[in-house]
Image 1 (cartoon, rainbow, N blue to C red):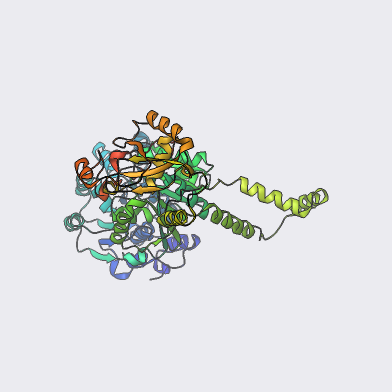
Image 2 (image 1 turned 90 degrees about the vertical axis):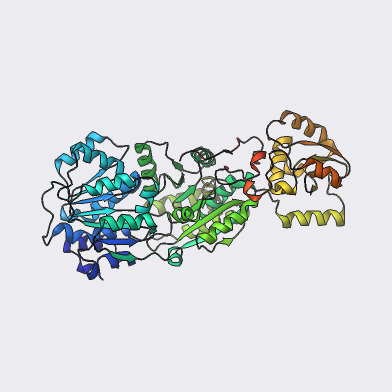
Length: 594
């Protein structure tokens, strides 16, 4: 159904905004069969549902008139789960109803309650708010529900998940029974159906959620890395894509702070969103992203729920989400309203199977790829630089400066200076540890064919009390050895992993320094013991392995290898997880509230 069927002033606002055709959910809610009916709508995030319910209630608010009446008691009430979503809805409705003279007031937690009471006392047409604050205004008498013609529950499933069921029921019980009730939800679990049955009359069921269509505009990439390289992987992904806007998700507030500090230190303009921020701090962060003062947002799941940022081209999962629904929710911040987006899932090597299960549960087909290398990033930089030079019109002032430069420098020198300036403005990419099975196999094959590599002709063997039974793998053992022994990855020779222990070689020239460092760092990894093992890499006898049993704190199942809430480490929990020497360890305990 075209927008021309809408009230004239609303259709004009839509046209001026650049909309040419309705999205599927918008077309359904303004169809003839939906006119003046209660609606139960399944709509994926990013489908244009805010504008959809704004269009759906336009005739209900106008009742055949050209403009809205003078502001008084509100005619429509919109309930959203979070402050950010409520304020976002307020902004959308303000431009949609601007020509109608609508007055939209927001009532959300974290804002000055007296200011909201004063705004309500002046009169309004639409109130947008969160359940707790709306309930508070109703109990105080500041919000009068007697004239409401429509009530909308936005992201109803999220509100029930957050524990707002009682608040919603209390609010709905206070509204006029003849009102229209529009319920929008990404999913339709049983509690939503019960809520709809109690508060809706002969509701029209509209379902536009299609798992395949929801992911059609998002290019999913998955990357397995060493746990110690997760931050570096985030850096390289951001640099490779150079998106106008990017959102990076972490599991806890602490990891949000840590990753944001790392990105800022490396030269990225980054802001954070987490539950510990005040509403003003959140608003400043979101505004910085909207006006391009910041290009990266590091956030927890709760803080980013319902946020729509124009131009968000890239989403990175720096830590795996807890379930497929959260994966979909995070990823849905990009690829919205027909625009293309990219989603990158970064996972520790030993959690790849868990990541694959999450992707299957979310019905997502992701391409497994490697993290972009510095050479690949520099090649993309060159492509972008050449594209940026294809400018349109050039001002006379620019031409005058160019002529003066050519008088004193050659064209080649000017171009080189320009390239240097461009490169200096970009953060440097990171070198990641190459401890993949392929690279490790090539190195061992070369050792067998050509003998030890230079510097490893005379070595000392050491042992660790973790083996295959504790998910030992060079991809996280190597960073651990570098940190504990104050060495680099180039100082570690062959690594042999057995059932209950791992043996590795160190050049004899630095073995003393390595041993001294081990003594000083002995308490850093709970349960991991590193000691000299003589010169033979043979595995221990079977009876000795049986007596030893599993290493202290070393879980024997993949679940122990950095489960949800295990921080950016991802190694067995009992071992504290690997990280680079000199870096502060990531949160290895349970989740903190986000």
